[in-house]
Image 1 (cartoon, rainbow, N blue to C red):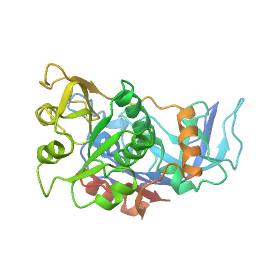
Image 2 (image 1 turned 30 degrees about the horizontal axis):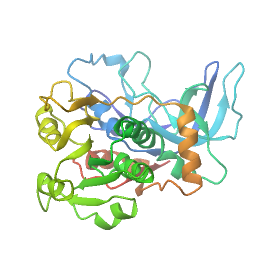
Image 3 (image 1 turned 120 degrees about the horizontal axis):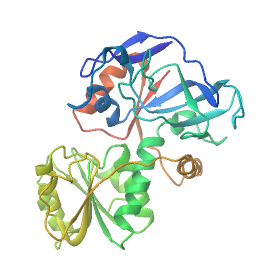
Image 4 (image 1 turned 60 degrees about the vertical axis):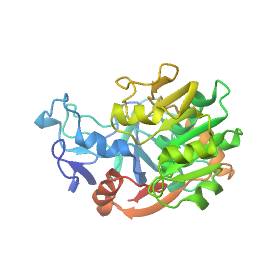
Length: 320
């Protein structure tokens, strides 16, 4: 089968040929038709300094989100049938033992039938379903953390990407004032998604834009961009006392935040039930799925590089 994989951490992703996975007991094999790009895809391919780049653990196939049709069923009881349209999220690939490490930028993937996988509603296109898992579940769980204390204003940094686009819609639906910080003129699109105000940080400073909209600061900050504790801490100064500052980049623990601001390192806890809720919302048109571009599998390496440099607009979907 075709796959986009890396031969070592920090190597360039490339198109390779790999054997089809065989489903084990309790697994289903899915013929993938669409995969969605997420920042964690290129981050996993880069690895971290403390990971052991064991040679036999590669190639590592990139990707976690997928949508397709069940192609084969493993032995034992199973809740799926051959031909079912399904979508889901696998655990982020790591350099583990085996002939290769499976991701979703490939023709086939085998997953446990009780993992984060579910049926696609009849009226939801597969391409749309593929764009939901990581970004949609992240946005939904972030919202529960950010507004469960009755917070009324939310600053989202990196709002134009997949997570930010979903979060803006979900927060707006709960009457939360969303200030969307983006790079480039996205005022019209973010307003259509429910943002109260949009700040183009290439045009003026973030601080100026926030103070104009919320002179006393925001109740909650969701930072999808800052890669260092220092940058995250600087943006957390825009949060009023008693508020929270949440990051998806794992830098809150080392950040010197204001004493009266609670820092949170977000970790996704994916579930098939949450997938069902998101799919229902998308099928009913309540949740808009912001697909920016569709690319063939061969173009995935360029898409990963584009995402790494920032400025994402909605979701990138890979067509297999």
